[in-house]
Image (cartoon, rainbow, N blue to C red; front, side, top):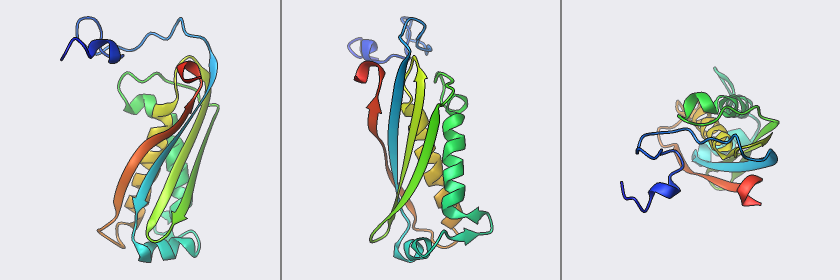
Length: 159
């Protein structure tokens, strides 16, 4: 690893080993992060889900994906090494049909704390997208999860 990158990599300690960031001295602020995942399901599946929440053997697709996204955001510290455990103030997952063949999933997470909440928002959007894939895969083997990204972050250094 290049020494020029070391100061930028916050989870690498002075010895080059993984280290959790010490947030003890940081101020408590309101923080919000919003992440988005795009799932290309195809026109046929999109038509079915836009006609009403598509029921499957595992339950209704949108409702199940929303619950999965919130659950995942709450468990982010158990999934991502060195991620601080946070008590979320709020987490909302939305799913929107986008013609001709896609779903946009957004996860907005909020916390009042010492560290950012973007990993929770990204995890929520990702797992909601994976849930849509899982629940619709019997109808198509051409579903693609694309462009999982952070689209908004406020609080802490970003303000």
